[in-house]
Image (cartoon, rainbow, N blue to C red; front, side, top):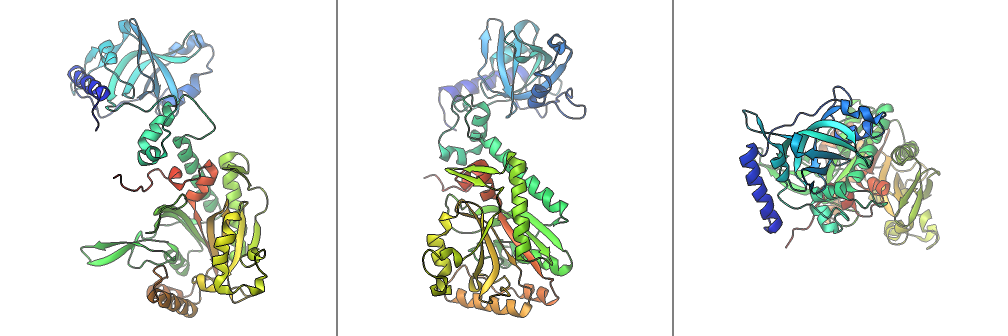
Length: 495
C-alpha cells in the first residue's frame, strides 16, 4: 500500500481511534427497522420513505439507526458538523453537535466515549453507524440529528475524486471496488450509467430471463464445471489435474452435452445459467470466462426456438428499459420490430450469386463481409452442415444445418439449432471432428463415447439455444467493452 501524507494521517487517526473506542473493526452494527418491520433500515429506504414526509415537524418522532460510508469529508462549523453517509445508492445527511453526541466503545464490555472526539478522527470514506432522530434542515434537506455514533471501519486509502469519478478504464476494470465507490460518490451525474447501475441492470435482466423460462415450464439445473472431456463446442479449453484421481480435467467450454443427456433421462425443458471457459484471446467482445444461458426444449425445432428467443429478448428489453428501443453506441436498435431471418448464403447475395459460392467458403465470406454489418436484430440461418456437428440437417436441404445465430450490432448474441439425436450420425460427425483435430484443428471436437451411449437410449427431437449474457448486457447498458459488464474481468498482469 502506497505511503503519502494522506495515508499517514489516516493511520494516525486509526491509532487514536483504537485508543478511544478499542476495537476499530467491530463485528456488527444493529440497524433499526423503522421503515418496514422485519427489514433493516438502509439509507436508501429511509430517504425514500421520509424525504416527502408531512408534516415535517413530526419527523423527530422517528429514531433511526443507520450505517454507511462517509460520502463527503467532515466539515466542522464550530461545535457542530454536517456530513453525508452513503449506502452505495443514496446519501443521507447527518448532523452532529458536540453537546449531545455520545460515542460507543467497541470493546466487549461496552460503554461510552466522547462522541465529538470520535467524530474529529473520521476521514472521508470511513464507515460509521449512527442513531438519532430525523429532521429537515432550513434548506429542506432530510437529515439525522445524531445522538450516538459508532466507528465501524477505517478507509486507509484516500477515495476517488468525488466530482468526476474514475475516468481511467484500466483502473475501473482492474479495481472494480474503486470504480463502485467512485460511482457512489460522483456528484456530476451524466447519461452514462454508474458501474453499480450497470450491474443492477444486469441482475434485472437475468432475473427476468429466469422468470420467463420458469413460467414456461423450464427447470434450472447444474452440470459439471470440470469435465473429463472438453466437449460441447469448438474451442480451446483450460486444463487442470485432479491429484487424488490422477486425471486431467477441463474447465467446461459448454454444458450442451450434459443438458441433452437430461433430455434422454426424461426432462423436457431444462436450462442452465452459468460460466463457460475458453482458453482463447481477449477482445472488447471476448473474455476467457463468460456467462451463458443454455436451454433445451423437447419436441420443438429451430423455428419454434427462434420464435421463443425473439419473444423472450423483447420482453427482457422492455422489463429492463421500459421500452424496446435500445441505444448502443451510434445505433438505435429496435427490439419491437420482428427479427429478420436470412440464410447465410442468402446474406452473401451482394458478393456473388449463391449458386456460385462453394460451401467451404460460406462462413469465411460471411465473417469477412457480412457479420459486422448486421446491426438490427437478425437471425442468420441455414449454416453449412460441416461446421455444425451437433445440429440436425435441414429436411429441405441436407447440405445445410437447421441452425441459427442471432446477430445484433454486429455481435453474435445467441446460437441455436435443432438437436441431432441420431446416435449413428452423431458418431460419424464426431469421427469427422476427430480427423480435423488430428489434422491440426485444435478447436475441433473430441469423441464423446458416453454421449453416444446416452443418445442410444433415445432422445426426443428437441431445439436448443445458448445466449451470451455478457453481450446482451452490453446492449442493455450501452457498453462497447465486455469488461465493463463483468464485475472482475480478466486483465493482463501489470508489468
